[in-house]
Length: 106
Image (cartoon, rainbow, N blue to C red; front, side, top):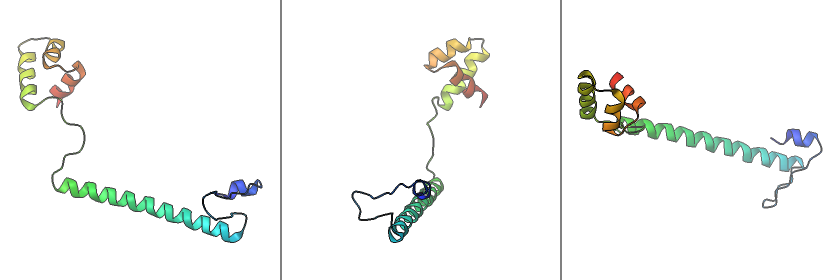
């Protein structure tokens, strides 16, 4: 992370930490801190995936809730089959026409 700035003669010294990257020890410490941060990011990601899988096994549903219930979809299908316009049916159910099309297709 600091190789490119170091090659250009830039020295990095954090104001809140006693790390001087101009010295070999300071660079080593800074690299270790970077590696630990990367490890922590990986562990957090791994735990998040494991938690999501466990929740799915428990039956938790992910994603957005459906806009229309199955009863509403059946009602809309009957209305469309009777000849009602799709825009009218969508307005009746208070949804967009594209939402109605997706619901009827599924």
